[in-house]
Image (cartoon, rainbow, N blue to C red; front, side, top):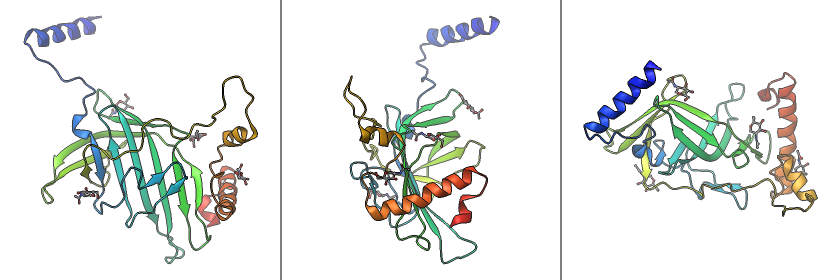
Length: 242
Ligand SMILES: *[C@@H]1O[C@H](CO)[C@@H](O)[C@H](O)[C@H]1NC(C)=O
Ligand SMILES: *[C@@H]1O[C@H](CO)[C@@H](O)[C@H](O)[C@H]1NC(C)=O
Ligand SMILES: *[C@@H]1O[C@H](CO)[C@@H](O)[C@H](O)[C@H]1NC(C)=O
Ligand SMILES: *[C@@H]1O[C@H](CO)[C@@H](O)[C@H](O)[C@H]1NC(C)=O
């Protein structure tokens, strides 16, 4: 009670002084596409093609985040994972997600993906001829962020801090306004018309199966992905199989 009154008094004091306080959700300085140093992994249609369910592997590993002025985000990841048992056999992971984000009153950023739209391509060339393509979704919390001018490159730089306060690799402004795919749901689970029974195809896609549009060879690799996931769930580790 006392607290609310104090807040009201503070608000009216601010208004009386003619201050147009910035809303707590202000994130204008975040708007744009931000890429890691190599600048070859970037959100947008050149990275992920949702119509053909296709990724284009960038020239270099890296990450990219886009933020729009109306609260949407998109992210692109291309990472390589060393294989300590066999250094000649690194694995590659490509991930794409989009959704909406909020800037919380405490300065944290919360990113919530459109779960059905995210995709992952897992590539392990020493084990398969084809990469493994699956749906992917994960929410993210950044404890805080800061935008500054990079002292060496003299371009805007975004530092994102993970949920535990540790910094991500620095990102640099690559595009403004941001380069993004449409921010609406790109791959709805069903397209059934109202009142009609779900078709066999719609039922299949409800299984989380995103492979229907891909080739037979790609599907063969998918089998091993599902097998690996099942074994992980029963206590093994996914890496054991690769
Ligand atoms: C999103 O991820 C969670 C955790 O992996 C999973 O349980 C859920 O089914 C996923 N949602 C979709 C739509 O794929
Ligand atoms: C900020 O608030 C969000 C929820 O609003 C919370 O999840 C997060 O942990 C908070 N961050 C810090 C640094 O306390
Ligand atoms: C990064 O790449 C984009 C798109 O190719 C380009 O417009 C931008 O100037 C590049 N930024 C830097 C810092 O090289
Ligand atoms: C996904 O769809 C493909 C092609 O329709 C099928 O061969 C495969 O068995 C399905 N996988 C799962 C996990 O349902």
